[in-house]
Amino acid sequence: RYRVQRRSIKDIRGPASPSRLLGHEMQFRHEEEMGDVQFQWLRRYGATWLFDKNQEDVLWTVDPKALQYIFHTSGYRFPKTKAIDQSAKIFTGRGILTVKGDVHQRQRKILSPAFSAGQLHTFLPIFRQLASHLSQKWKDELEASVSHESAVINVPQMLARMTLDVIGEAAFDYQFGALDDQRNELARLFQNLFVDSVLHPPAWDILFRATWHYIPDSILHYVRYLPTREYSRFKQFLDAAFRVGQDLVDQKASSSEKGGKNIVSILAQSSVSDDVKKRLTSDEMLSQVATFLLAGHDTTANTLTWTLYELSKRPEDQRKIRDEIAAVRKEIKARGDEDFVPSDFDSMPFMNAVIKESLRLHPIAPMLFREAADEDVIPLSEPIETVSGKFINQIPVSKGQAINISICSYNRLQSVWGEDADSWNPDRFLGSDKERQASVGVFANLMTFSAGIRACLGWRFALLEMKTVLTELIETFEFKYPEGLDVMRLSSGIMSPAIRGKVEMGIQLPLHVSLVNGA
Ligand code: HEM
Image (cartoon, rainbow, N blue to C red; front, side, top):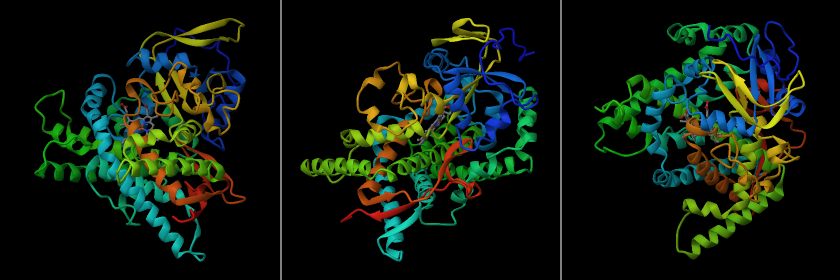
């Protein structure tokens, strides 16, 4: 009924399907390195192509005008697919990431004040303090090493603990203490959560998920209880997040400090609000805790990891950032301040360009999955030639048409980023040309934080956190990429680094770390 397609998209070109039953899904979910398969299709078919997902025709597009239409112009007319919503519900419940339409609008309105410019200002001391704590931990590690000045450190591990502590303090007024406590329950539950649950799903799971579209939500709710690898790790995390969340909200509700605009204060106030527009049910409230724990820490930790990966290969880029930090330090001293204010980071153009380039090449959430809520017509910025030889500059779609939006492919589109789109080149962000083009995402014309009414709520938070941490780390340490190390993009739902041939070890980036002279 819902899936019957009156507006066929079969005339759109795309790769031949390798399997009648599974289509491209197995090839896509089992590619060795995240993006390998789709980057080939991108070069062969351009920005739009047809993909066979378990015998369903899926439109795959990264055309800038199509993205603008789907994410901005059409409001809620292209919701997330039921399968992706249900997958996210398994680990975040009924929080802002998984709800739709009016409910999403209500939740977003309630939560947005926690990310205002004024609030952001209050986070900076937390970011500075925890970045410096991480830096001290690594200094201690160097001190304890044989040479006392250099060691190989697996950087994502402590970065993830630090970003967990950051989200604890900034969002929940709570010290998880993950940097200090190696046995911290949440930190352990998060470690390799996606790798353990999502990496290389078996064929039965791919086929099972293809049926979700036809199963009522009330039954799908029980999928989380399946005792398999794919589901049990996520359930453990959600149970722990709900438990921790209830404690945090109870503590806030009983504390004498009322008001406040951080997440936990907002959650405590909305759980008792008389105004239905401002109220969150208990389930919604705890789901937000799980959502922010997850969306707000691994994302930033992975992006920082990838940034150090790129910088460790380029001592010259590290030096340029160090020079910028030294210049800003002088300005801070000259004006009589003790420490950075958020606007100080604006005077570091190269560091900002490095962060943008890292977000471009290494988007932690590489894909988004949407479907048309109704019949619609998607405009394209460039006409495409169809199988029958026609040139079309818009694609009529039926209600229910599934659309895959690849953030990682859009971020490498040559028509937007130039012929060197596959290579590291932060200088591309130093001119203003790229940012003058039609803006697609919420930041720097990138899709990394998504776009429109469902764009990342924490993107300013993440940027300020990353700038603060990078400033601390590059000022204090030199990072060097070990000879012979072969790091790859792991394909586990999120894009994270792993060592080729050792993916069972999960997220890894062991770098040579030493103190900058005089640090
Ligand atoms: C580099 C870091 C980050 C990246 C790349 C990132 C990326 C994204 C993306 C792509 C989405 C859209 C997901 C979808 O539509 O399915 C999203 C949503 C979201 N992100 Fe982030 N994120 C980052 C950091 C953060 C942080 C630090 C927070 C909170 C403190 C946060 C909170 C959220 C929330 C609440 C949503 C759901 C928004 C909605 O549906 O209305 N994110 N993020």
